[in-house]
Image (cartoon, rainbow, N blue to C red; front, side, top):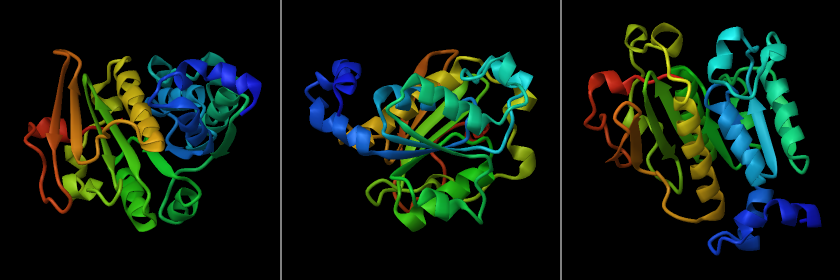
Length: 255
């Protein structure tokens, strides 16, 4: 690392659990963020600030006015521009020591394996169930962990899948819900602060995976309710068929 990097990451490196060796691991890591929306924006900011050496961004959408309430990387002048390109430019400006790659396209069955194979792990910042299952299946095929997050209204979920041969997304949710059972934020809303809270926890899981520090959410589902500020953790195991003991309405989160 350069002298400038040592100064930039000093507060993180003086943590005994991280140190210079941990910071070097962070610098060498390659992390893919799928979706540069409500979750993707804070995840990208924190991974860039922490010094993740190579960050990939995949998103085919353009910035819209309604995104600005929660997608904190964007301003009015970004409306109509591609999120992947704008977010890449902004985190590169935030930390010039990064390598930032972006693709203006959606992850799909034709490109998922090729894209994900270039990274060490994946962060799910998507807003639909097909994308989640696609990420999960590609990560299982490639033996890559992925950090899951989901938000709706005042509630969120966070977990880690496919980490060290652990449970996958399909162990928790074997089958996609019917289309009429999966509401999204455009239909019933989301509090502006919720994606920031969930995304920060996702970024935290990424750093723990990279450095080997602490205990990850692998095999555990963290459920957050902002109205009561309750955090509950439900355990699940590899090969488990069924959902944790949650109310039905809390199982169909979208971004």
